[in-house]
Amino acid sequence: MTNRIDPNTLQLKDQVININRVTKVVKGGKNLSFSALVVVGDGGGHIGYGSGKAREVPMAIRKAIEAAKKSIVRVNITETSIPHSVLGRYGAGRVLLKPASAGTGVIAGGAVRAVVQAAGIQNVLTKSLGTTNPHNVVKATMDALSKLSNPEEVAAARGRAVEEL
Image: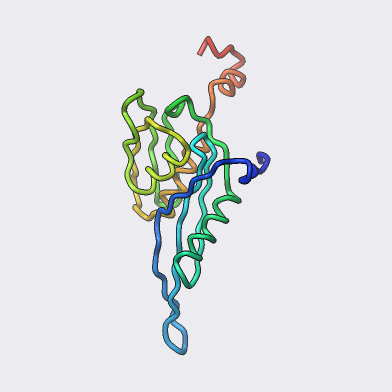
């Protein structure tokens, strides 16, 4: 496993993806609480996600941000896009990410857009396949981003120079 990234050294921006009202039925009635799904990123390849649950929305968001800061990972991106196409999977969620030329922008919807923008990717084509559940879509997107390899790693694995690829 890679070394843990210190969130205090990064300029992180948080993005709330989903807020859900959840109820627990108990003997005395129903207990209302809120769950929040948040993604944090510095726009330079560092990204993390987390969820939090509390009686009030602001507390749930705060907890989710703290959880997201603990799960920050580094992803391999080129100047404005991603190095190669990749398919991420989590549960019934599948997310396809394809590199795009400069000026294309982020072609993505909902949860995928939030994750990709937080990572700092400016030109990418995406397609969410399968479930639309935001939790699974975010985890599938993170899986896809974690599978990205940089040209130096690929060249070293093949025993060639970067220029030969």
